[in-house]
Length: 454
Image 1 (cartoon, one colour):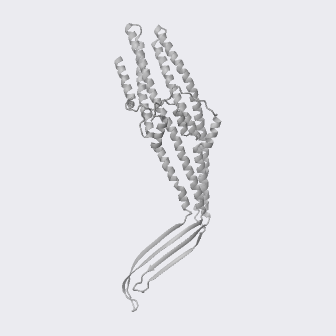
Image 2 (tube, rainbow, N blue to C red; image 1 turned 90 degrees about the vertical axis):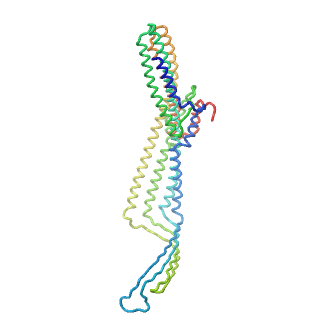
Image 3 (cartoon, rainbow, N blue to C red; image 1 turned 30 degrees about the vertical axis):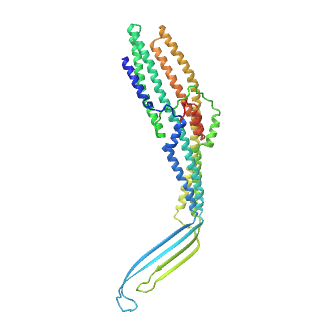
């Protein structure tokens, strides 16, 4: 039984860390993973393409007030057949005839007053501003996604290491229980209890290895590369208390949250759309110049060829009188969309407030948990030591030792998770407030153990 258990431990060690066999000795830091994400994340690439496409809106709107020049040309071949059914006219020959006509023309138009086009130019500027904010939001979200995925991998990796250490401790207790049972100083209950704990931890290790693989694939989905070694958090990491209260963070979020600003731009665009559509009732004025040339050669019927050249310049005024009610309907629709945009701002504002409150409280909780688990780890270690001593002198059972060890490993796991949550929640709070930036990732990077450099 013991040999089988030892074999399983070695097998699990190999499977859990097979990905590290050929890995670079220098671990990747959070900043390096983020730089990989900047170059390979498809979500950010999509946002960048959408932003570049949106930049063309201004040029397209300006084109509405620029002159247009059109060239038209045509050629016609005509065939006729004349039969005189009565009488006789020597001047009109019977039979077939063919002749051609050609024409070309150039027309230039310069808008002088088009209210809807003027509004559309202003509208395009807001659209570009909104697209820029959407791109910045995608960058902020990438920082949060990278940070979360990075520490998910570390947490899953630590889970495996803690389980392996726990298995080794349980195996030691199992060996001792078997030895004591053989000499008659322990019961079979102690052996069975240790064996049951070992089997349970082995099952937990299978789930931990699976979660580790999932976490690594999550990083790969962002960076396009399966992560190798990742820099771990320093064991002497210290948490910093929040320098500002919740009310101040809510003010920051109200002023800087990009989702709110994007919805404010959407309201401005919808307001301009109402104005643009109402301009459908207004007259338009264009300056128009044209030149045409029409040429037709003669035909046997009349023997007359012609060439007509025409040049014209002037103004064209168009006043809409009745368009079937379509303009009024579009205006009513735009007004309703404007109201929707106002409601969307309120939704974005309340969502930002809720997410800021959640992030702030989670960060506050993480700070308190790190301190509490640090103390719990010290206490759990002391309990393990005293319980082992009590077991040796016969006042404690092997079950007591296993329970104390379980509590110690749980405290280690909870402390690591609290530290990772603390670092992630720093970025989450700043991202929700709209103020997260690359220097914030650099600050967290300082909390990592980075050997050498790349």
